[in-house]
Length: 281
Image (cartoon, rainbow, N blue to C red):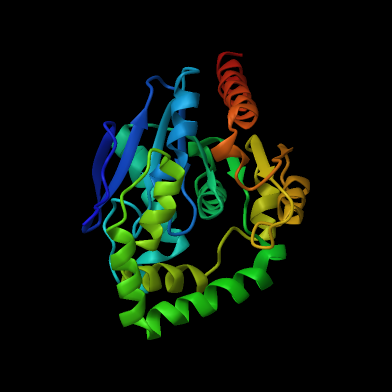
């Protein structure tokens, strides 16, 4: 049976009664914490992390509770968005980092945005790839509510499918492995994550967003109802210090990453250097 495997830079930390898995790429004080999408894991962002680490950044990929190699409690109450924010804070404390640039894709973008609203003093910047906000709500409900009900009430066939996917060999392309790992989740684990996220707020309020002044790079793309470009564009208009970067497709950062990782790297340089300049002024 195929099992999840950690990268050479794998570590873990205690969070409440659980263990969280994270991976570290690069060294230094310029810290980026980047998070995966819903049900996915650190595999999704490994190539990007390696590229940004080569530019002098320390990139940490966190598996949120219920994802990847982190513990997977099968209770919806463990998977609220505010608890995901707590996990980011626990990681920063564990790393001894007073602040970091936070970012992620989809779920990871929303967690980062909420963390900035809750603890703005610990966030140097934000990289928000395909945030899921108000314009996405109908598509999210139509997609994930039936999916949650299916894995909850049809656990036996869903478990058979997950077991078969767990037996599939993993590939040399880590983003694809992330998808295979998501499909390998046991039905009760998957249902708990979906239920926990869907019953609560998925991001900060509009007033909280308007109050944020942290430098932000928002990455959006068209032709995706769950991650509509309109959400990315509206967020840039709401935030005080944000700019919009349009991806050519939902998979550009994974299949042809050089253009977008270059833009992200430039943004990280600006976020850290501007903050350091203010500190010494």
